[in-house]
Length: 531
Image 1 (cartoon, rainbow, N blue to C red):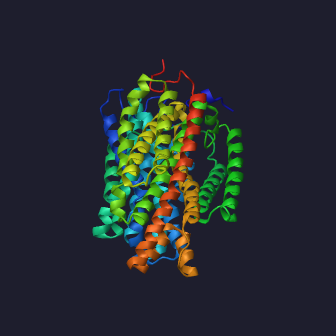
Image 2: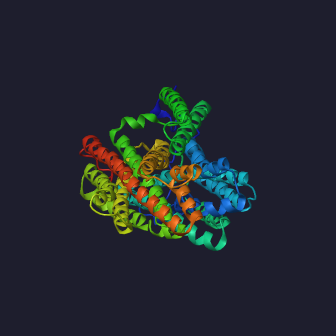
Image 3: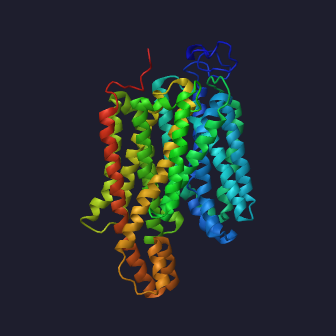
């Protein structure tokens, strides 16, 4: 059995872009085509990020048109994230073996086909199948973007800037999704939310085939089918358990059964990967303190951001009676703050130790999450205070995720960037899902506890207590003074409920701050080139 040092060239036919000349690699560090590559990858990522939230606006119109059952509605919402989460590790490893450019372009072909299927859908199961295929395409695309950026930007400072653009585009795209979706759906119906993907995907495929370089990592030996199965089962069960926990609460045994299955499958997966010479995922990366802390920072950042965007969207639509488009526009302070600080973070990383920049980013996040609860101690909270909190939270997320992305990829050997990219994407996806599940469940429980006694019949009162969305529907059905009174009571109860949930998120990010300052090496400088 050959040693790791001998693998790339000794008797192996696998291409290795990092250790020998690659006809697809950009020439010198000053090759201007690297900025074209960044623009293509940013455009592709913007589409993927928007697609994670655009359905929030299109969903009511879709339900009215296709009339799916309650179970079908759940699958329409969840199947994209389940497919994406379950396949990220496998897609990252396939990109290393088969070529990252090839995986990205294949992903966009699937994305375009899935979008066309959704546009032509006449039944709920058509949309479910299309959303599942969109998740498969997204899983092929997302790790490839980071891997290609790592391959193209060989200068550490430029790579930090490229990752900052990546973080800004991803965060901004999530916030822009409801705005763009609202503009399209109001004039052209729910199909337009999917139709937008097709020309953008076609453009990315055409430009990517022309300008993107190909890159590989050496992978000798057989493809690890057992590892693929274990990772897919484990990640599907983990994502499904987290989402089910948010829907049915802590008393339902189903999410706990799914989480137990996830723990079992992922434990077996990790133990197997540690024994293999050429693992599907190099889990020993987590032994690097910088890598682990960076992944944790991304995960907790998305816990807070995901929960806040979900809860504030509900508060704006149901508690403040805004339309989906109006609510989406009012979320923009978060994306503007994120984009702004993402762009200035590389300069901060060059001047100050990484542990300080990351720690400050997490502290700013903590302030943004704690602000609504603090304001509510003194006065009634309205949108101006929420807008400021969103902006502060976005600024903290922009700093923290940019530093964490640069640090995570800098701590990863070139041969393992596909796996590292999959880990980062998983932190983004599962962090947002866990934020909605845990902090969203806390807000729902506090909302129910805070509702006053209702002069309604048993079934109607139960609907009001079930969720703020059901309560708003009941209030609009009642109409008149009775409906207005009910909506005011529901809005007050929900406003009081969400701020402690934000505060719980602030406690998590404050803990992450302490871990960052304790664990990140003092001399770590991922924006400096190795000598």
